[in-house]
Length: 557
Image: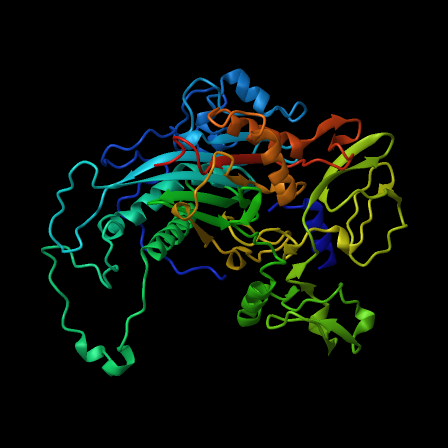
C-alpha cells in the first residue's frame, strides 16, 4: 500500500456518487456531428482548430484537443506557436480589430510553466438562440420571429490529465443548455407560475388513469412554489449531467481523455446564472464591494460528502482506504491507542481506539492547494513539482517521515512531510466536481475514482435589474491558476487601478484588465522561476480570465 501511495504522489495527478443514466437528448448532436437545424442563431465561434489553423476530422478529437485554443483569439499559426511556448509564456487576448466579444467582454490567457505539454484550459463565449419545442397548451407552435429566447454564455474549462474533456465541453455544453431550455421558452415568457406538468404531445395516446395510485388528498393539500429562476437553474444542472454522460459514451471512440472543472455564466431575462463545478472561481466587483459568485469544490470543502459515500458504499474503498480522517497517518505501533479522528457526521474531532482497519490510507488526505516550486537537484539541475511550498533537498537517508515520496538524482532524495501535499481524493485528484474523469483510477490500482466525483454544479443567481451598475462593475471569472496566488481583494484592487486609467466608454479597458490579472498572477521570469513582485512564486499553472462588464452603455439590454 505504501508503494502505491508513493507512486500516486510521485505522479501528482492534477486535478456524489455516480448519477443514474439519463436518456440522451434526441436533438443534441454528437461531438462528431453537425449542429441541428434550428432558428437562426446569433454569431458564435466555430469549433476549435488545430495548430496548423486547418480543420481536423472530428474523429481525431484528442489530436485536435492536444493543441487548440479558443477560436475567438483568432491566432495565426505563428500565434499558436507563441501561445504554446512554456519559456516565453506570452499572454493571449482577442485582437483589437473592432469585432468585440459580447458585452465588450475582456479575455486573457497564458500557458503553464511546464506542468503539461499544452495549455489544458479552454474558453467559450457565445450568443445562443433558443426556439421553443412545444406549446404549454399542447397546440402546435407557430413562433413568429422574436418569440424565442436568446441567452449570453461564457465558459471556462480547466482541464487535467489531458485537454480532451475541456475542449469537448467548450464546444458542446452550451448546446446542452439550449436543449434543456427549449421546453421553457413559452413558460419563461409567461409571468404566471410554471405548470406542474407539461402536456403530452398532440396525437400521443394518454396513459391509463393513475388516480388509484394517489394517496389521501390531504397529503397534497398544497403545491410547492416553483419559480422561473429555479427552472433555469434546473436546466443548467441537467445540461452538466448530460454533458458528462456524453463524455462517458464517447470517451472511447473520440479518445476524450482526462477531465475538467467547469465555470459557466448564463445571462437570461435580466439575471446572471453562475454555475461552478470544480475549483475555478467567480466574483463580482461592484463599487469596490466583492460579491462571491461561486465556491471551490475540493476534498476539504466536500469531505463529509465523500466520507458519507465511502461509509455507505465501502466496496468503493476496497481494502486500501478508510473513510475516516485522522490528523496524520496512523502508524502500526499505535494500534490500541486512542487517537483523534472524525467521520462523515462530524465537523469537530473526537478520540477513538485505533483498530487494524484504521491503518488504511485515508479517503481524503493532505491539506491546502498546490503551488508550483523549484527544487535544486544534483549539480545545478532543477525540477518543477506541484506541491505546497519550496523545500530543501535532503541527502538520501535523512527523510524518515511516515508519508513521503522520493526520487533519486545523483544519490539525492527529496523527502517531504504530509503537510506538504495538496488535499486529494484517494491520493490522486485535488478537485471533487467537474466533467469527465471516467477512466481515472487510483495509481497502481483498479479502484475507480469517478464515483466520488460529482458533475453537478452549484448555481448562484444575480439579478442585474436590482442594482444600477456603472461601467466599473464587473464579473471576473478565473481558473485556479489565477486564484492560487491572487486573493479576491487583490483582484478588486487591480480592477480599480486598471479601469480608472481608461475612459468609461473605452471598450478595450476590459481586455486590459484581463491581461493585467493574468500578468499579475504569472509574474516575471527570474533565475529561480516565475516570481511575483514580492519574490514569491507566481502561478505555474494555465491561467484563463474573463472580465464581464455589468453596466455602462451597450453592455446589456
